[in-house]
Length: 210
Image 1 (cartoon, helix red, strand yellow):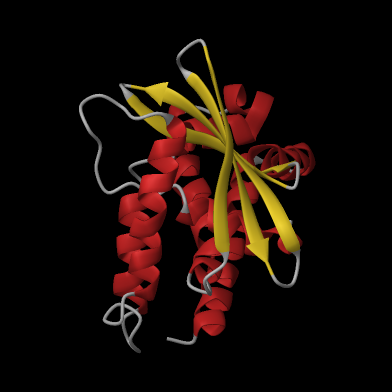
Image 2 (cartoon, one colour; image 1 turned 135 degrees about the horizontal axis):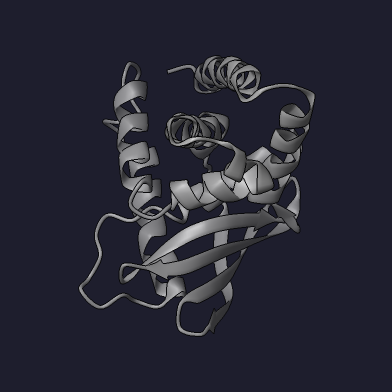
């Protein structure tokens, strides 16, 4: 998973929304319109200044909440094990899952350096499920395909999964969580998740250095 982090940050960057119209736009328009918003946050001279890391990341996380369907993604990432969790465990896992994802990729979002983003294809099924394919052009890795899987919830398009080079974020974590649950308890898994989150938070700080 580590080698895909540098690409997943584009997925986060392209999925941040600052506001929704009463009638939802198509999925591609939502992704296209909001990409500039998050990249503006990343490159803002004031928010990019030394000592502004917490403020910058808080803003990025705040606006990301408007488009990522964290409860659905968390539930899907647990797979069959979700049914084994009681309500208290589910309420504990969802925010931890969100923080796991965000701490893993925020540092890479902040490393954006002008890579070109193209919007290639869109597919909508039954009026409520959508896919948007984008291509990120990088100097080091060439063209990278990213697919946003979305669904229409309460009149708004929300992201339920992201695939980079054919690797699904949700399925990847589902494999990891299934292994942890098979080898131990939910409580033991949460201890490991919190340690992972803290490690990623430290690594993100070292990566950006601000």
